[in-house]
Structure formats: C-alpha cells, structure tokens
Amino acid sequence: MDHEVRSKTIEHIRQLADGIGQASRTTIELSFGIGTPSVVNDSQLTGRSAASVLGADNVKKILRPSMGSEDFSFYLENVPGSMFRLGCSSEEVGDSLLHTPTFDVDENALAVGAKILSQTVVSWFDPHRQSSGDTPGMTTS
Image (tube, one colour):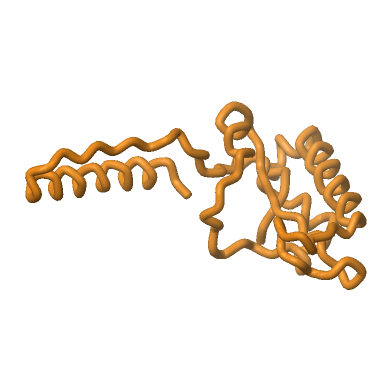
C-alpha cells in the first residue's frame, strides 16, 4: 500500500533470511519480482466531482485499502491520475463478486462513471479553480 513500507518489508525479509541462514549454516537466496506498485492517487485530482454528480451521501470512503494489485498504478507512476471504484451492481443484475462466473454489470453505471470523469475534466479546467484554491477530481469521502 506504500512504496516505503514495501521496501522496508523486503529488507526485513532479507534480514530474517540471513539470520536463519547463519543459524542453520545454509545459504538462502531470495528474489522478488517487480510486482505491481501501489496505487497512489494525485491529491490535485482527488477532489469532489463524484460528490457533485452523485451527492455526498452516495460517495463512500474506502476505509480499509485493498491488498490486491492494480496495474493502473503503472500509469500513475508516469502521469497524474486518480482511481475510484464505481459500483456496478443493481437489483436487475444482482450483486455477484467481481471475477466470478455469475458477475454482471449494470450498464447504467457506465453513464455514471462517464459523468464523474467529465465533471473532473470540467472542474480541472475551470479558471475559477486556480483562484479559489478548489481541488478538482473525485472524492471518496
């Protein structure tokens, strides 16, 4: 969830392996793949567009970050961006979990996502944003 924590964790695992190797008089070789970096949203893009489209009561903050991987993080290492989760279940399609054979998308969610992204672009290029100190983008609060 954090670049620094990842680096410290890998170093700690290496120290443990070295200690076990010394205690057991063995050689332990470790290798870590590149892996997917953490998703780090740009604070200037994470603002209030979702709340302006959906209403603040309909936008929920994710209190416990996911330990899953997301390749969108590779984009965020190169360009400013912000990722949000858009609910896509409904009474019509059910609420099956992602990546299961029964998963279905309520396609009405696509229009909602497009509205949020459009509002983010409009907000970002609003000339009053610079003078008022507003931060554009999507919010999770």
